[in-house]
Structures are given as structure tokens and as C-alpha cells.
Image 1 (cartoon, rainbow, N blue to C red):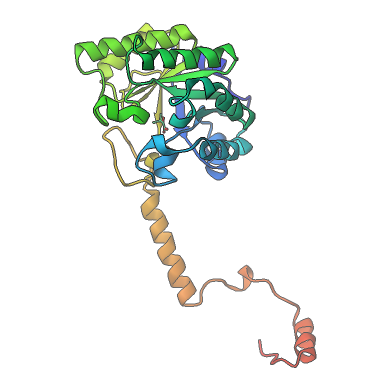
Image 2 (cartoon, rainbow, N blue to C red):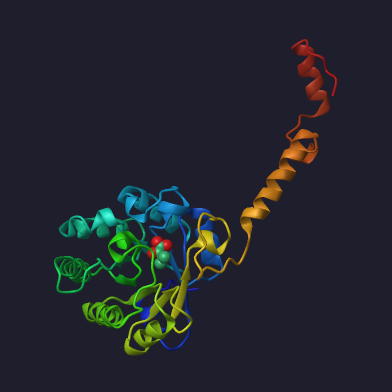
Length: 292
Ligand code: KIV
């Protein structure tokens, strides 16, 4: 199966639904890739589910890069997108290009940028436009992200659904069109009423990928650890856990403890052994008890 490209994802708009999951390590990436997921996002949700931090804005570029490299080693088919962490572009927009180039050198094929909170005419909005324009000018494919943007959630009044009133709905529609005009190949819509994300999806020529944005988006994304029931600290309403791996793992660990305790693990097949005559000769040599 061929490697998917941003152009393939763009061409899928209106033809089929696009699937995306986050992933942060080699072993899971291999599973996701073999299961034919379209896009693997090395999301900055790594901060929460892997590093145990309370905010995504706290994850460092180096941490994100190391995990992107691990994922890239396993993937043959899915498109790999690295999430630009807050510290790599929102503090000093001019430096963003250097960081994005390192992600691409590390195996990502595109980067995702969260819209800076603030409308397009504010300093923050202009900085966001500058970052995206500059990356695309340097031939780095960009996925946008609007709605609830966790890196700047505090300036949005917390982790809240966005676009519920006239002004904020119009702002989202405007941001989506700006991103499309800048040349992003796709946009994540996070925590937006389904009516607004349906409208945005209809208005755009590029695919929308929803998370908490209803079923009318061109594709859907979930955080892998939510999807597998591994991260239990919070469970937003939009999360569907397809597995309760956390409970299954606890059952398996309970079994391991029991079998180690009662001597059932490891058995003969799971142990290395010497031929009996070799053992007896060695025991004799070392003056050891040769009882087996
Ligand atoms: O980091 C992440 O997991 C994300 C998804 C919520 C889209 O950005």
C-alpha cells in the first residue's frame, strides 16, 4: 500500500471519510499503520497522556521531536503529522520554521498549527498568519486547527465549546477561510457545535477533521489513549472509548502477580536449560549439588 500524502488527503474531500488518531511511540504506530489509519498525529496531547502534565503548552519541542522520530520508524502507509508545540512557534514566530524543518527531518510529513487565540487583525492573529505562510512558502505542508485550541485555552475562557454565539461562529468561519486561502491542506475543528462545523465543511474545498465537532466533518480524530480507554483523568463528552484497555491490563497484571507468586510463571518452555549430562559435569566441576 502506498504512503499517503497531504495531496491524497486533500483529494479525499467529499469522496470518503478520513480517519486520524494520535500516536506517540513505535509499537502503537506499527499497529495503527498496519490497521490502515489514514493519518497519525503526534499530538501535543502527549503532554497529558504520556508525560502527565496538566497543559499541552508545557510539552517541549525536544520531547515532541523524539516521539515523532519513534513513530516515523514504524510507519509505512499512514501520513505522519507532528503537532507544533506552543513553545516552538507561539512565543517566537520567526523561529517556527527551524523547528518545523527539524520535524520534517525527523520523519513527519506535515505539521499542525493551532490558531493563536485572537482574531486575524490582532497581533496574535497576524503572527499566526505569518507562521503558516512562512511554513507553506518553505514547502512544509500545514494542517490548521481552530475552535477549542488547548494551547491557548485560558484565553478562550477555558476548555469550552466554541462558536455558540453569532460573533464566535462568524469568527470560526472566517478563520477557516483564511487558513484555506493560506494553503493549509486540512483543518482540525475542535469542540464546535455540529451545525457550525457542517457549515464550515460545506464552505471549504479542503477537508475538515473533527474532534467534538459532530459527524458532518470530512474526517474524525481521537486521542489514542482516550480511544483505548487508557487515559481516565478526564472523559470529554465527545470521546468514544472503543476498548477499556486499562481494565484489561489490570486483569493481566493481577494474573501475572498470582502466577509469579504460586510458581506457575515461568514454566520449563519459558526457561533456558542445559543438557542434563552437561549440567552434571559442570556441577561436579564446581562441587555443586546437582539435584534438578
Ligand atoms: O494533540 C492532540 O491530540 C490534538 C488533537 C486533539 C487533534 O491536537
